[in-house]
Length: 152
Length: 130
Image 1: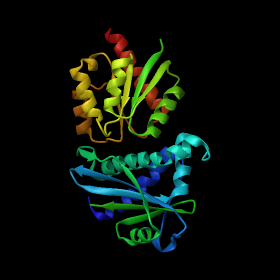
Image 2 (image 1 turned 180 degrees about the vertical axis):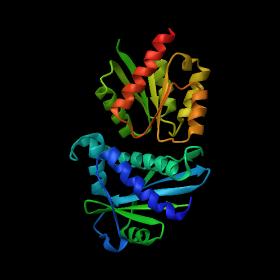
Image 3 (image 1 turned 30 degrees about the vertical axis):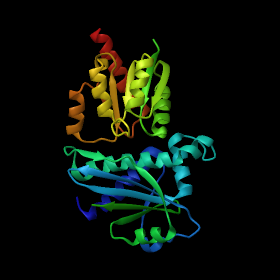
Image 4 (image 1 turned 60 degrees about the vertical axis):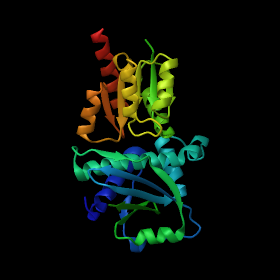
């Protein structure tokens, strides 16, 4: 596994988003993306260990979390269940993303242990730093930027 | 015959989705029970008859493998089929789980058709064994 595999991570994310939430994301250039201080950013992260050790995170505006959750659950974003389960939906999507990514990069033989995915909030300053890192790729869901980060 | 189904996953979203998928798959459902980890699942199994278990592997408190090992000690693996529903992609790990006696494996994300296929095959196989 190498840092360049961030491109594979981006492709796998787009596939997983389509399969789980029936939504589409498109690759974007970092220079075209800007955030705002008003936006609330959520970051979901998961670690893997075994054949190789690393971390994957996805960072996105809070609003898009709700939309993804609603699509996964087949409900409207205003539904109470969606409000309660929004973060959980993102964590599960990350879980699937990690599993699919590891298979894509390392094949079906190696065994990996995945951590329980976690969620945290990210400040606009930290979001900006994350965006500029070499091992971060960007996709757009409509006009919302999603940062994908791979650390090994 | 209506089947009692136990869904074991630490994600409330996955539990909801599997429950809905089972309903969409038009299988004959008696009751769908839910547990957030292996420990809760074992409690459910003590209190209620369950015809089939759908369980994740990676869960806090007690993971899927630990749950299966305890079910084995309790003699439940012989009577209650366990289907693993997981993001796991390693054939090595899947083979290890099959050695422990799981009856099927579904990789996430899954479709209603896949759930129904595995459900029907598993319970059909059990009827043939009786």
